Image (cartoon, rainbow, N blue to C red):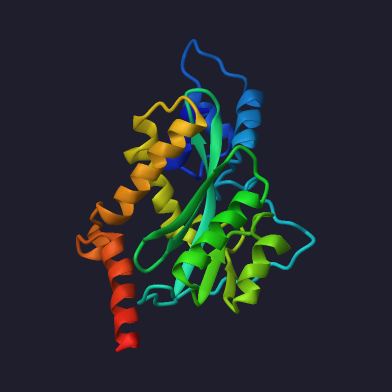
Amino acid sequence: MRHIDRIFTDRPELGVRRMHQELTAPGSAINIKRIRRLMRLMGLEAVYPKPNLSKASSEHRVYPYLLRGLAVEERNHVWSTDITYIPMANGFLYLCAVIDWHSRFVLSWRLSNTLLVDFCVDALEEALGKWGKPQIFNTDQGSQFTSARFLDPLRSAEVQISMDSKGRALDNIFVERLWRTVKYEHVYLHAYRDGLSLYRGLAQYFHFYNYGRKHQSLGYQTPAQWYVEMREKDNNAISE
């Protein structure tokens, strides 16, 4: 599963058959049924990552994608969220995070050992309670994100809801880039043995990511310099 996760992080276009070819070496036969079972367990499918994580709920409305061609030029214009698989030495967990598109600032995150909606709602409510609200909130069409429990706080706050087009991994590009960064710069370098050590390690990394890691796309400034400092300046301007 760790090998599958590394390969899929780099090449999300790979389906079961091509993943089977990548993992099969001369003299080392791997049953394709095993690859299919593990990818289902991890929630991975070709082109669009996490379709099991992103399996739409037929009971709820799917909102249109609002970000095509949109220039995002200020903080709290667009927020986005997603779920990814995080491997450990013994087992795995799922990670959900909420990110501000303009600044790349990670507003909140949660770990869970199940795909129930609870940890996604917790991350959303923390972001809204701590940082205000966005004009637009973008998600994929996963059952977690189309559920009433997740959408109700956004509708109550009069936030415009946007959902990725089915089968388009790049619609949520900034979160996909975040997952790759988190995995290659942190998760793959630490063989965390359990959820507690993983939680502590991610807490340290996300603080570094927000306040210490300089992004080329941000003019070699940190996300906090683009989000927190701008927020403080706006608050000071309002008070004056």
